[in-house]
Amino acid sequence: MGKDLPVAPLTSAFYSEEQKVTQLIKLVHILWKELEKVDRIIQVIPEGLRIKCGQSEVLVLENGGIILNGLRIRLRTPGKEQLLY
Image 1 (tube, rainbow, N blue to C red):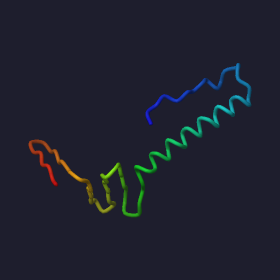
Image 2: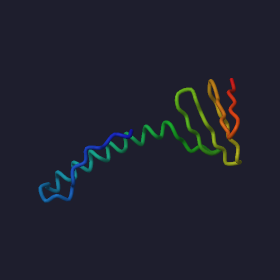
Image 3: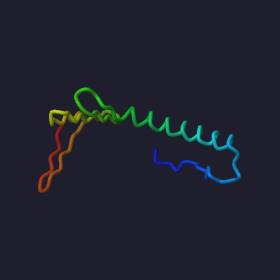
Image 4: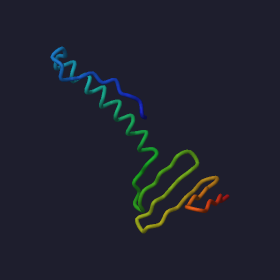
C-alpha cells in the first residue's frame, strides 16, 4: 500500500477503447489486491470494529468499550505514561 500506481491518462486520443479498457482492468485488479490487504487488517464485526496487526488487536465496541490485546501496551496521556504487561 502507499505505492504510486502506474496510471496513464486514459482520456488521451492516443489510446484505443480496447487499450483504455485493458488499463482500467489492470487498475481495478491492483485496487482489489490492496483492498484485500486492508480487509485482513480492519474488519467490521457484529460488536463493532476490529483492527489487527501481527499479535496486536484493537476492538472498538458499539457500546463504547475498547479492548486492547497485545504483548505490551503503552498508554500515553497528557502528563502521564504507563506501560502495561
